[in-house]
Image 1 (cartoon, rainbow, N blue to C red):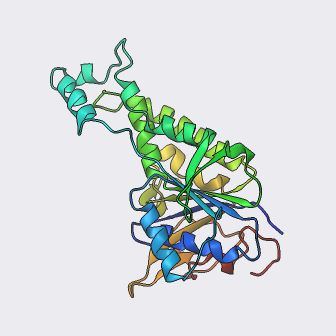
Image 2 (cartoon, rainbow, N blue to C red):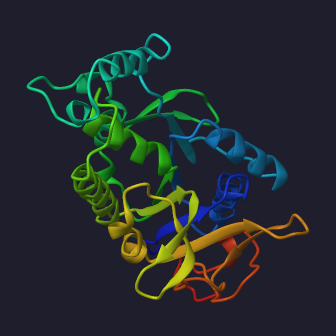
Image 3 (cartoon, rainbow, N blue to C red):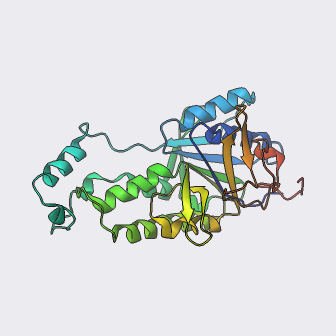
Length: 285
């Protein structure tokens, strides 16, 4: 039987996050109607997944993997940056932090808006046939579907861009707006009927309450959200490489934020979704 899992998988670059997504397809026999909708926001997302499919010798069939590559709209190279910095050099620091009566060029920073629109009407490419597939609103996905967001960092950058526009200097009040949209976006994902996996990078953050440094998901949205963000996920997995170069997952690791509900509360786990209780109710752990 299928069940819904909401997973945050985070770690440093090259720690096997996208690569491990290939193991989702080992579940295909147990979940014959499973379909993976893969939203790529990182440039190397699809490459990592492809390497994983090859390494695990997985042969996909039509309608098992539909991917969409999200890219900022094509524009003159560094056009937005030139406009923003040209305005900045003519202003004092105090003036540069003020909003003006215009929209501050925000209509040129639409990446986050395009992501939202893309989820409202998901259109992707079938990995096997290379044909375009119109999936529709992700709110209509079923429990047998898995939506993968690879990854979170470009989305946060997109929110920052649309909030600041051409303004070169961040304001303190920007963080509240960034946090609101990031929380709203994540909450919408958590309320979907399908399973969701969000891939993200890791940061070392000082915990003011516990007075220790911890490894947490990289949000770049201020410290107020850092200790609360992962609470909405059913499972939080830390992905890393051992000194011997072995890529592993952690369900328990000193100084690292994790939440193990459907996989063992242990360190140095094999990076394989088919080995644990994600998306299934047969109690294999």
